[in-house]
Amino acid sequence: MSLSTESRSEVLAPVVLSERAAEEVKRIMAEKQVPAEYGLRVGVQGGGCSGLSYVLGFDKPREFDDIFEQSGIRVIVDRRHALYLMGTVLDYHDGLNARGFVFHNPNAKSTCGCGSSFTA
Image (cartoon, rainbow, N blue to C red):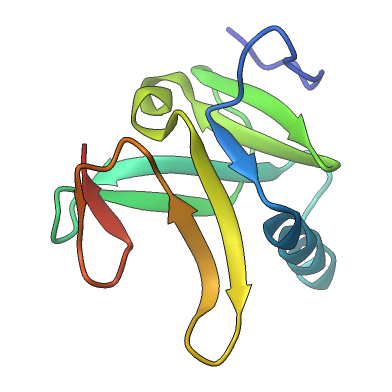
Protein backbone atom coordinates (compact mmCIF):
# COMPACT_ATOMS: atom_id res chain seq x y z
CA MET A 1 0.00 0.00 0.00
CA SER A 2 1.49 3.34 -1.06
CA LEU A 3 -0.17 6.13 0.89
CA SER A 4 2.96 8.13 1.54
CA THR A 5 2.48 11.89 1.47
CA GLU A 6 6.13 12.42 0.66
CA SER A 7 7.26 13.52 -2.77
CA ARG A 8 7.68 10.45 -4.99
CA SER A 9 10.82 11.67 -6.78
CA GLU A 10 11.94 8.10 -7.49
CA VAL A 11 8.80 7.54 -9.58
CA LEU A 12 7.99 9.72 -12.57
CA ALA A 13 4.65 11.47 -12.06
CA PRO A 14 2.24 10.38 -14.80
CA VAL A 15 0.51 13.78 -14.79
CA VAL A 16 2.18 17.18 -14.65
CA LEU A 17 0.29 20.35 -13.73
CA SER A 18 1.01 23.48 -15.70
CA GLU A 19 1.58 26.65 -13.69
CA ARG A 20 -1.90 27.93 -14.66
CA ALA A 21 -3.54 24.64 -13.64
CA ALA A 22 -1.72 24.61 -10.29
CA GLU A 23 -2.82 28.20 -9.58
CA GLU A 24 -6.45 27.35 -10.40
CA VAL A 25 -6.41 24.18 -8.28
CA LYS A 26 -5.04 26.16 -5.32
CA ARG A 27 -7.71 28.83 -5.83
CA ILE A 28 -10.50 26.23 -5.91
CA MET A 29 -9.12 24.40 -2.88
CA ALA A 30 -9.07 27.63 -0.86
CA GLU A 31 -12.50 28.76 -2.08
CA LYS A 32 -14.14 25.36 -1.39
CA GLN A 33 -12.16 24.86 1.85
CA VAL A 34 -10.94 21.43 0.76
CA PRO A 35 -9.63 19.54 3.84
CA ALA A 36 -5.85 19.20 4.13
CA GLU A 37 -5.95 15.38 3.92
CA TYR A 38 -7.44 15.58 0.41
CA GLY A 39 -5.53 15.90 -2.82
CA LEU A 40 -6.29 16.38 -6.50
CA ARG A 41 -7.33 13.03 -7.97
CA VAL A 42 -6.55 12.63 -11.67
CA GLY A 43 -7.69 9.46 -13.40
CA VAL A 44 -9.72 7.83 -16.13
CA GLN A 45 -12.96 5.87 -16.25
CA GLY A 46 -14.77 3.94 -18.93
CA GLY A 47 -17.33 5.92 -20.89
CA GLY A 48 -17.58 9.01 -23.00
CA CYS A 49 -17.85 9.18 -26.75
CA SER A 50 -14.31 7.87 -27.32
CA GLY A 51 -14.13 5.11 -24.72
CA LEU A 52 -12.36 6.67 -21.72
CA SER A 53 -13.17 9.86 -19.82
CA TYR A 54 -10.94 11.87 -17.53
CA VAL A 55 -11.64 12.08 -13.80
CA LEU A 56 -10.65 15.22 -11.92
CA GLY A 57 -11.66 16.04 -8.37
CA PHE A 58 -10.63 16.22 -4.73
CA ASP A 59 -10.36 12.98 -2.80
CA LYS A 60 -8.49 11.11 -0.07
CA PRO A 61 -5.78 8.62 -1.04
CA ARG A 62 -6.81 4.98 -1.41
CA GLU A 63 -5.02 1.64 -1.38
CA PHE A 64 -3.77 1.56 -5.01
CA ASP A 65 -2.85 5.24 -5.25
CA ASP A 66 0.47 6.93 -5.81
CA ILE A 67 0.85 10.47 -4.53
CA PHE A 68 3.00 13.11 -6.19
CA GLU A 69 3.71 16.60 -4.88
CA GLN A 70 3.54 19.34 -7.52
CA SER A 71 3.58 23.08 -6.85
CA GLY A 72 2.45 22.41 -3.28
CA ILE A 73 -0.49 20.24 -4.43
CA ARG A 74 -0.91 16.54 -3.62
CA VAL A 75 -1.73 14.85 -6.91
CA ILE A 76 -3.32 11.41 -6.47
CA VAL A 77 -3.25 8.84 -9.29
CA ASP A 78 -4.51 5.28 -9.06
CA ARG A 79 -1.62 3.06 -10.26
CA ARG A 80 -4.01 1.25 -12.60
CA HIS A 81 -4.71 4.55 -14.41
CA ALA A 82 -1.09 5.66 -14.75
CA LEU A 83 -0.57 3.77 -18.01
CA TYR A 84 -3.30 5.84 -19.70
CA LEU A 85 -2.05 9.12 -18.21
CA MET A 86 1.75 8.86 -18.50
CA GLY A 87 3.11 12.09 -19.94
CA THR A 88 -0.17 13.98 -19.60
CA VAL A 89 -0.06 17.70 -18.89
CA LEU A 90 -3.05 19.21 -17.12
CA ASP A 91 -3.46 22.82 -18.18
CA TYR A 92 -6.02 25.51 -17.43
CA HIS A 93 -7.42 27.92 -20.00
CA ASP A 94 -9.20 31.14 -19.10
CA GLY A 95 -9.92 32.83 -22.39
CA LEU A 96 -12.75 33.76 -24.73
CA ASN A 97 -12.56 30.56 -26.77
CA ALA A 98 -11.90 28.09 -23.96
CA ARG A 99 -12.26 28.04 -20.21
CA GLY A 100 -11.48 25.17 -17.87
CA PHE A 101 -9.04 22.34 -17.37
CA VAL A 102 -7.55 20.77 -20.49
CA PHE A 103 -5.73 17.43 -20.71
CA HIS A 104 -2.82 17.16 -23.16
CA ASN A 105 -2.35 13.39 -23.31
CA PRO A 106 0.31 11.92 -25.65
CA ASN A 107 -1.29 8.45 -25.24
CA ALA A 108 -4.61 9.51 -26.74
CA LYS A 109 -4.96 7.96 -30.19
CA SER A 110 -8.18 9.90 -30.79
CA THR A 111 -10.35 12.32 -28.83
CA CYS A 112 -13.93 13.48 -29.01
CA GLY A 113 -14.90 16.97 -30.07
CA CYS A 114 -15.27 18.25 -26.51
CA GLY A 115 -11.84 16.87 -25.45
CA SER A 116 -13.13 15.16 -22.32
CA SER A 117 -12.85 11.58 -23.62
CA PHE A 118 -10.25 9.68 -25.59
CA THR A 119 -9.13 6.34 -26.99
CA ALA A 120 -5.81 4.92 -25.86
